[in-house]
Length: 198
Image 1: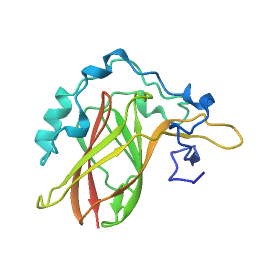
Image 2: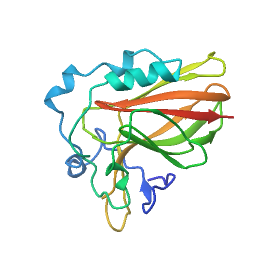
Image 3: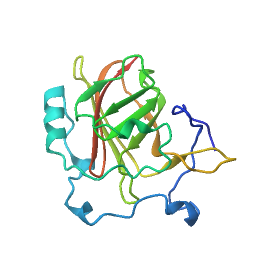
């Protein structure tokens, strides 16, 4: 287990929920929903090069009306109030929410050219969904990135158990310094972030 940047009130321990995971953890994730086959294929979706086009995509991306599936909400009350699907700037915060995603870790000053640790918490985690991150540098648009991750992790404490939010841990490399427009999707969950890489 490796410690990651912490959500408020949680110690994050990466514990992959992939094929090698004990079956006792698989019941944390929601099963594959019936509508999954009708979702857009995010792995082949176009990379967006400006905020207006990205937010138009967010308005069209299918939405889930159900409350969050996240276990052990505790301090993760960020799902209580709806947040629009708008591109959100990280600023000086260590956690940022846009639409159906909360992200944290190295979100406010990532180093370009090397992997940075960012965790991605979708509102409706399900076993069959992968995280797809698409990004373009905004100033000027010279670089893009696409990142896919199917490995889940869950927050918790070794003493108390894995009771916290389900998330994707990532090591994303921004190819060059600048402002990056990043869209994250996981099934019906969609979020957009403007991150700075140095």
